[in-house]
Structure formats: structure tokens, C-alpha cells
Image (cartoon, rainbow, N blue to C red; front, side, top):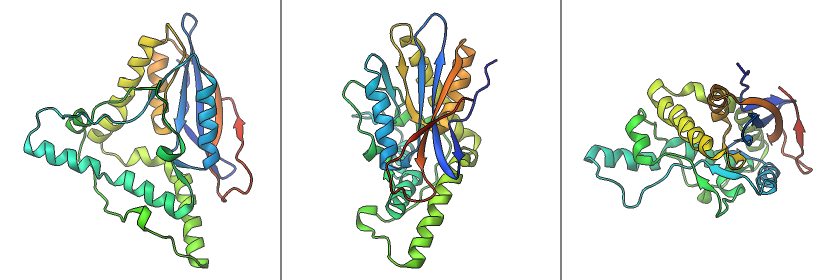
Length: 250
């Protein structure tokens, strides 16, 4: 069976995410684009260039769907749905981006009209996931990071934590949460990709933590990992020159 590599790694102290090209003899390729939810501005420009270059491909993006109007819900489900909107991970990333001068993925990578959502609905997600911890943080638009040597040192430490902690964030979820947040969404996206790949290449830009699971599903369906390109997402020092991508084969 094809060896499946992770969607991110640290190279030279900098966090990189993978662009994996999976091929099969009788279909078009599937190109998994691993994303970091916060990163350098030039990193998202590199990702956008890859997506815009593959004009004949179907883009299946990540983003939990909020149904309007929502389906019938119990009182507890209504409370859990509201809780999901305030889930601590998103707020934590907003705070980290404001503190370190990085950019949020949602602001750095603009979705195009021809892209298609391959994610699950919020209601279905909460019904198969465990409890998500809520972290209340101030709105980063109203939060200014202090100046001075101590503040700069703290921002530098936070940047290093983002680089090294991102690779292991998947280990912090309990089994039921991982089932919904990671595994089930991987299945949902890849089964959609497999229906399309006979007609066109498929590019799913998803969180890099999803790539190993998605790769296993592609390998089960006779795909082979043919090539991996590594994009620098977060440098250990704030860049003074435009980011560049590096290439590496697994």
C-alpha cells in the first residue's frame, strides 16, 4: 500500500504544508492542498496561484455548512449549535494571528464562485461529535498587541508554538470529536472527489491535518502519491522578503 505522509512538517525551523498529487491510471489526478489556518500573507498567495493555475480542475473546499433555515432541533441541539459558533479554536486562531502579525486563512484565501463546498453541515457535525470546549477571548479587532521587548518576545514564542504545535493538534481531540471533526469530514470530501475525478482533476484545499486521512482513503481506491510540494506557511522569524516554496519528494 502507498505510504501516506502527513500534511505538514517543520523544515529549517519553519512550518510547511504539503501539496500532494495523487494519481491513478484510469482517471485524472487528485491534488490535496494542505492549509494552515493562520500563515504568512505570501503563503496564501502561493496557494491561490496553484488553485488559479488549474483552471480545468474541480475545487472542493472546506467549510462547515450552516443551513438556513436549520432543520428541526431539540432545545439541547439549539444550544450546542450556538456553542459551535463560538468554538474556542477559531477564536484562538484569531487571537494568535493578531498577536503574531500572521493572517487568517479566511482573509488570506478568497473563495471563488466556481468552487464547491465538500464539507458537512453544522447540525450533522454536532450530532456526531463530542463536546467542543469554548474559549472566550476578546475580539481581535478590538485588541492591540502591546509594544516593547517583552511583548515582542512573547509574540516570537507564540509564533514558535504555532509552528511546532500545529503538527500535533489532532492528538488533543477525544475519539468522538475526532470522528466528526476529522474522520467523517475526510470521508465526505473524498467520496465526493471520487465521483468527479473521472471527468476532471480534483483539488481539495483543506486543513493540512486532514491530508493523512484523505491520503489513506485515496490509497484504498488505487491512487498513488506521485509528488509532494512543500509550501512555507509560517517562518520562525517574520519574513523580510517574499515567501518562496520548496519542493521535496516523500
